[in-house]
Image (cartoon, rainbow, N blue to C red; front, side, top):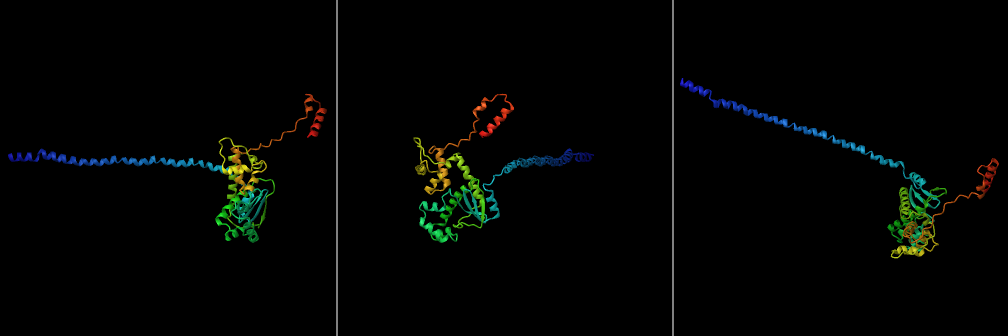
Length: 328
């Protein structure tokens, strides 16, 4: 009995039962796997919804700014449509205009001449870089076969790079005047070549672009085109006004008789550069700016018209008409 009672407390030993109850409670700790609920944080992948920010790609709608390409709606008109066409045809020959001639080879401009601009011969000889006799010999010996430029270099009279620089200066200078607006016909003679021969060909687009740039530059400096053709008359500088050496050389020739182009020829300088210098002098008040030509005034109405009655008859109106027609 005592053994049974002793066994009973042994079988119902509360610590044992408590142990059995507690140990299952520990497995409840697997509730911690509920922590994966916290992995609902993968809601963060919803953040890709925030990637709706790819709406920013809608910014390409802002690229409606390519409306700026609408600017091509008003394309810059070519300085010489015929030059552009000949370049597209890869033509060879001479383009003759009012104020000069452009020579093309395979659609590229190889030379230009204008009565307004000193030629490459003047630019080379006026500054003493090449004796006049040396130039004339080159023309005599190589002009017929159109290789004057090559002869100058091969004979050692001038370096190849120096010739190219001088030739490009003369080409752009003459092209500026040759491509000036004119009223006469533009003609093209196929197959014509210049006696200087190939030196450094230039694309027609480059010639047009440079011509346009020079026109804009002159207007930016002093927008009075009358300065380019009128005799240049110097003015005294104001006290303290600086005058450069280059400007003084021009002012010494500004005698009220020579035009800017005549001064360019006298100095052996490119004509456009001289125009630019003269406009700068005019902007500085160192040469006079000629007055713009006055607009033509309409013919005055005969004084007797004022005496006409306010209620003239038909016969008077006819006489008035006949008199006006006779006065025109």
